[in-house]
Length: 631
Image (cartoon, rainbow, N blue to C red; front, top):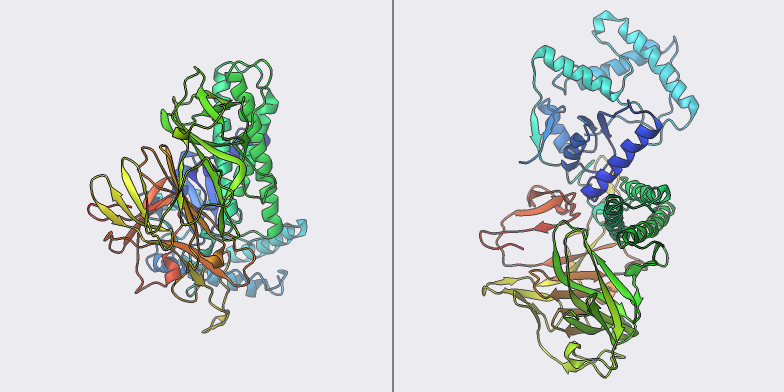
């Protein structure tokens, strides 16, 4: 069962594709699933029924829906419904040891479940009921299958032989249930109600909202998206090479591609991309994804080589690598006299800035025809020990690149006698970065800082280094006032009539109050300004080991923001958030995406719902808007 909050629709489609392919190859061509079983994901997205219907899966069983929503649907007898797009406690006493059914207890046990079934039937529109048998981690041993079947067979026989009970109980599959349901609806000339929307954010009791997993283990959530990108690159390059002839693309290349698809699909599990698995399982996910990244790189290398007409396989490396599965990705450093290939996987031409790291300040880039594109050279700046440092032996070379749709362009790196000052960035800051090379001009500044291109100006606070406002070319100004806040965790306590409370953690977000600001006691920031890219590196709050970098590229309508934070050695349990305080009057509404596929309106209702209920999954984007403003 895929997660439905953090999973991107591309990964969901990949999982469906691989699953269907497996069934076709191993079960038989005639077996085509029609029903979907989604009882464990922590919240439900309408993107799933849309994608499932495209895969000819027409029915679904759902489970983890907010208990108040489930109660309301039950009161209205709308627990069966047609889920339309936009354009409560469960009886599961798994701690109670099972009892074998025999002649002495069959009457009592049969009446007990008959009574439960009868009560449950009052919640549905029809008298066709689906009763799941078992729960997580059941049917792991042969004897359990036999015992369950034999026990329920005795119960069903007893119930069906009591005509006054008016019940027909039998074993069945999901397909059997939905066939019976559709037959009964036609017989009684009834139609199911139509529902639209999603089922986030899920709660199973009291104020226990499952919004914690939206941000659990963000490192692996990011790794998932990188793998998705690598897979798409490998798939497109492989497909183009096959269309082009691709004689050297043997079955081993396709097998590597399948391995990548399966690693990505596996991580879409509702304890995978959610970040809720145990440490050993997470490490296993990481190893599989790291291996898949390498396989995707191999497939892309072979396919691109075939497209370029290479008889022998070329040696090619991507622009970043990972030393191990739990290590941050590192930029690859390029030497002079090497080639750089840009591959555009999109179906439209692209003209934008591309950046790599090079080993010498004398390295420049030129197109395959020998002409130089517009380019700039900057130091690679990092925060270390509360100071900004320039990394020795590393420089960032950015250049303007234009690549046609689904095509590639080759650039050549060459060495000059000395760096050209016209292409060097200007470095600004309160203090000169440690180790900054003398050929970079440094300018000491105080007060606010601005990054500008022809379309907008971003203004940063001189006190914190964080984004303060955005001024558009039209003259409009949008207040942003970015800063970091933290939520503490509610201590474990006792809930009325409910026993012990849960701790805020990987699944559930239980804050101990509203967010508190994280202070920046010793602000340190550096700006690197060039004709193509302007960057700013700011040291965030000290108690979060947090570094924030901003970038503004030539011709871009957006500002890039990258946060790097290390909370691994903190003794306390906190959640960190980046807050924007704007002057956009959006009322109570905001919008988030569902699986990168569609947008949905959310509404703040603090007078009705607790704070943790107002957090939603954002696998791709979010925005607020007023009549004329949008951010």
